[in-house]
Image 1 (cartoon, helix red, strand yellow):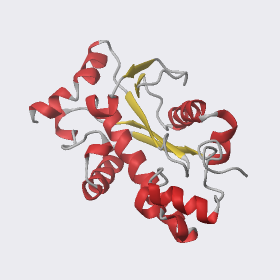
Image 2 (cartoon, helix red, strand yellow):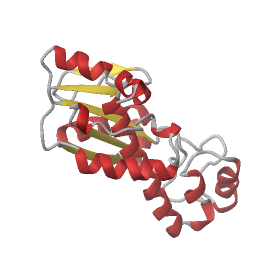
Image 3 (cartoon, one colour):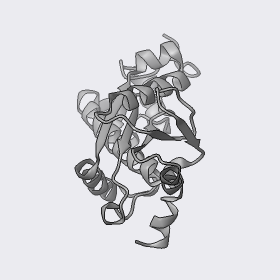
Image 4 (cartoon, one colour):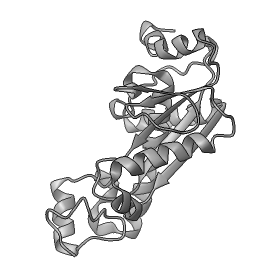
Length: 206
């Protein structure tokens, strides 16, 4: 195991030293886009040295091809894993922060195995288990990094599917984020059901 891999296990090892063995990590993808759901993943990974997957990092720092490969490895090795999403309409109703927290809580509560402790990227959530928020957790914690990768791959693939249904927006390219091409498409064609109305109100009024 490389020094970089060891550094990403610091929080997990601290939890183990305190008697927490089933350590879950959770992260979200898609808080910022103009369209599509926010997606969260919660995962409990085996943490013995032989089981550690090399290359896990913040999903945004990894190439698409490598993310896909890592996601498959994570899914195969996970002790328990759950992916949830909150749709655009609900995001508009409750705001993105509350939607993200709800999504994370749903993931943790949906795990087949109840964790002893939860490592969460930045947010402190109440999911019925002790929560330890870590700023930039997807880059600093192996377990959160695993959740980040699975959530990112899931959401990206979902947006590619939506691109087939709504080809004028180019979802396969920007995944719903507010690129100039995406904003131009909204202005020309109007929004679709995937667009978050509270996110596009500065340049589109229903």
